[in-house]
Image (cartoon, rainbow, N blue to C red; front, side, top):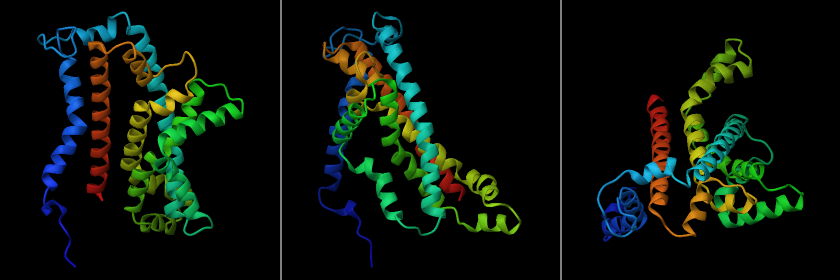
Length: 268
């Protein structure tokens, strides 16, 4: 049966360009006006880097610096723990054979992807209040850990599925224990998927606003919530600069995650 090429459908190209325009034109405009010498956010006054200097040395620099430290610390911790859990889950799903509750476990792992983020945010807040858990950095970390797991799991599981189990079987035929077969054979082959999953989980945690805003507690800010707080007082050019920096970090890490995953597939 011949495959259907959707690119041949009438209007496909126009629809694609319209979607790209709606999605990325605002980002491009923000990036361009972050280099605006004028204090106006609508009138171009010449090229300047002063707003980027203001981000690091201006009156709001301490607030953004503290928020950035919180964001990166939480993202590194959540991505690391999520990657470890996702790796263990991928091994169970793809190397443990059939077991009772496998489909339910897989659905549970992917549940944060299917549940609307606002529902996750409200449910997380209610849960922390119910158990008497004081909101703060720890609650942000726990919430980020939960919804980062499926993002780390997907590339790790995809990589593991592409590695035949004959390698581990051959290692055990040569008197390696199951742990040695995993540590010395399977784990090195999974490194591209693990790195890709870590980077994806990291950037998801770093960029999150909605869940963080619900569970962060008073006086705690991450970079997205600090930006939102400043925007409520009026959009200023330095906000465009810091937003462009955050966007640049996101693009670099997502691209790096994709390149690592692709390199791993090519080495297959």
